[in-house]
Image (cartoon, rainbow, N blue to C red; front, side, top):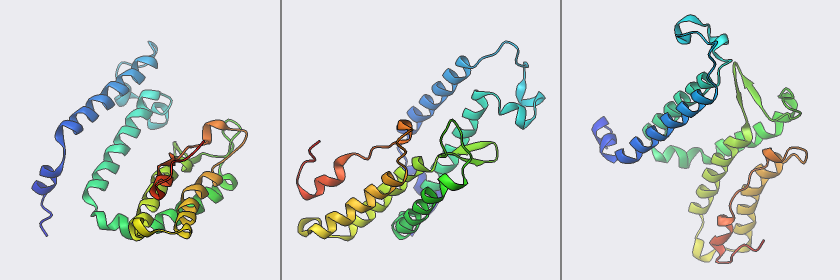
Length: 193
């Protein structure tokens, strides 16, 4: 199996990457313009410490852009079979993280849903969306969709609804996340609201 950089380069949709980078750049420019302060130093990256820079929204945005780029590279480099292999391990870890977050998180804005990782904050319920989709797709790939039974549907419902129930906080509607009912369409029946 050839895993050269040239193979990765050919398999990437470069126009989409350029559009993504343009949108990220414009988004960062909007954050910078919205949080501009005339009192800020002329060259803050060279004159301020890391802690002082964290007070600026545009700097936090740079950190998240850099994090996203690192994650994109990791997703491209890791073989797709690893996602298949570790889907349920990641799902179990995310369920555990969702269970312990209310107990270990410091209250921020009246909610114990944010984990502090040094100067940054992470909301596990956001990562749960990705991991739940990964686990649900892994489960659906392991069953025969044409001859599925009610048990398969219940297992899929459990996979998709458990993280939602664990991240549900009645007092904070902003924490609720909605998983589209597309997982229910595998049975051929539309979801009624």
